[in-house]
Amino acid sequence: WSFTGTVSAPVFIRGAGATRPQFVNRTINLTGTYGIVENIDASWPGGSGRVDFINSSSNHLALRNSYIHHSNSNQIVRNSGPDDTVIYNNEIAYAGTPGTERAGIGIAPNSERIWALDNHIHHNATDAFLFCHLCTTNAPAYVYIGRNEMHDNGENAVDIKYTSGPVIVSQNHIHPQFGTSGGGPSIRI
Image 1: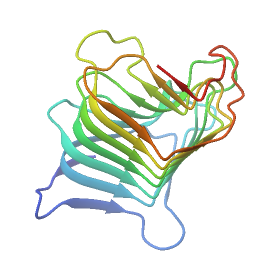
Image 2 (image 1 turned 90 degrees about the vertical axis):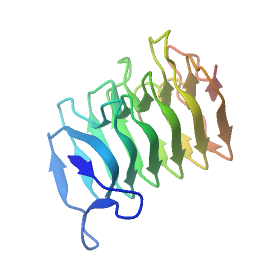
Image 3 (image 1 turned 180 degrees about the vertical axis):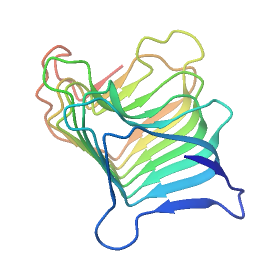
Image 4 (image 1 turned 180 degrees about the horizontal axis):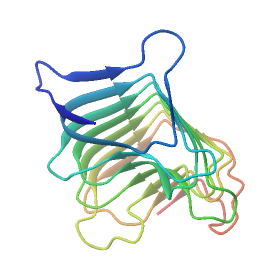
């Protein structure tokens, strides 16, 4: 989905009503400017797909109030380069199976000003929030991880590998992780 919104006229893709529209086995790539996706149900049972914020020239994109679940992708929600991204009030769960390298939310290099707020992230094979896995240059900066509930993930709640600027982890409710390969600490830096 490519957005061409502006600060005064953002573009919305919104599931109408109480029942969220379902997107099954369809990777959802978000690109462009000032776009908001909300109230959807996306899943990839037995497959690998994700919601992916793509293209480093993209900015001001948001995923809100959605259920993103059941995927074998390495991160079920991923920011692959855009700045000014908001991931708000979603349930993000069931990425991979224990023993696989699969996380709930992932942030790749070349990203700044990322906000992950009020999400419920659980039952992912590794981390609830995986930050810059295997990147050593152009690491993300200005990331805020706040008021999320994280539990029953395979390694850590928050795993910060590399950063080139401030990262704030504040007011999260972190229950025990079932830690396999990462030892299971709540926050790992």
